[in-house]
Image 1 (cartoon, helix red, strand yellow):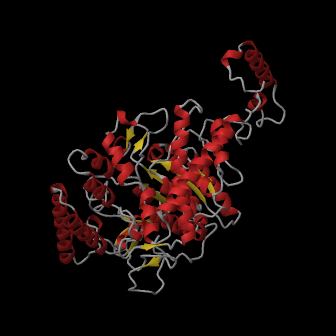
Image 2 (tube, rainbow, N blue to C red; image 1 turned 180 degrees about the vertical axis):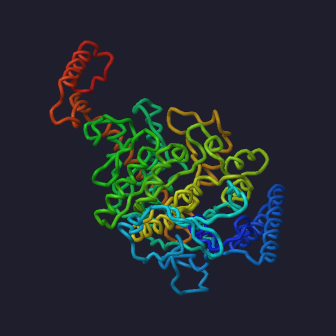
Length: 562
């Protein structure tokens, strides 16, 4: 399973020396052989479905073809996957075959390598020079690096020979994979992670019901993505800044944002930090270094890079983390931000929640990816087969989701099972270490599934099969998977479960009742906090609003102070 932890190196290793045409077009690695053989045995042993067996034999055939190519090739290159860099010294290894310290899982460079605040190469001459001879080839000393000339016309392939693997620690039953490499989680941290995930799940259920009752105007759930929220938050420091999208309340919950504070924001009362100006679920907290949610898609991504660069300039021992969905990667802000971060070497972590859907737009309509083909085969394969193919990338199709986009901009990247709390925790911990110590941006693609509707304004059954949604909600629930793991460790019991869910529900209902009874912010707050001295046009608007409310009180809530 070494390919799991080595995903960063697989996507981002940029140093391939003296590659021939053969090694450029045929990427061979020991990891690919291990990967293919592993999945053949998995499908053959654990699936009785004919489609699964069929795919298993295809897998075996592919592995044999690769092996034959490897044996016949004298120039097979292993430079894309360096097996001396499988894991960080901070990772816990269960194979016990090698206890010696090993380099970072995020690349060939050691985590302890000295960072560069301002790279000297930025100040080198950028004048183009004459052609020079280099290794018997003609080379142009072009600004930015030497470029070799070749006599034949060769287009770069639009895809890699192999799919990028997905890092996973826990299987569907909450059991550790053999030889898993992951960051050890203490009992205290594991129980807090699980409690927060249950609280988030319960909060979504109750607030969603409150909206359906007409008590709040809008709500948006994180059902199916609790592990991405809470596990990533647990791996960060409270000094790290968070630029969220709108499906990350679990990060705030981990940092100490109370249920009452969540309720105050959703009900827009006078205790709401946004003073009732924002829609529900648009949380923000200066105290918790959590920037206020904005509905505009992807605008927070370049903001995060700028903030990260400021931390770097101030030599702060912290990084910036920004979250966004797969839909956000179709915005220009995403691409500008990745390039910005790579060029400035900003300590920022990009976490993409690839849940398959941007409201009703499937990822097949956004970019060429392995995932759309998986969804299109739902009617022909059983769901277990679909999940295995989805996470282990066995289809041959151009493009490969979001993770490969990082390499195009020079950003180290990894694909993670977003429904696996331990995998998310380990990946973010390792990414944070590299981002701060090496001043590198990191892209994490977390594969998950939006098991709820996009929001209370959406009915996802209009564009997705109901049984598909239900399967992900039950069989792939990240909360249940983590519970099985902590129970297997003897840290949790059914009595603990019942008490936690009962107490959480009571606290939420009390918070909602208190938030609902609290006074609303006065109308004057609509016109404050922008100008030190309000201009005349705003003063005129405020006066007209007051007059309108008094003239038509039936059209306005009676509890809004005029």
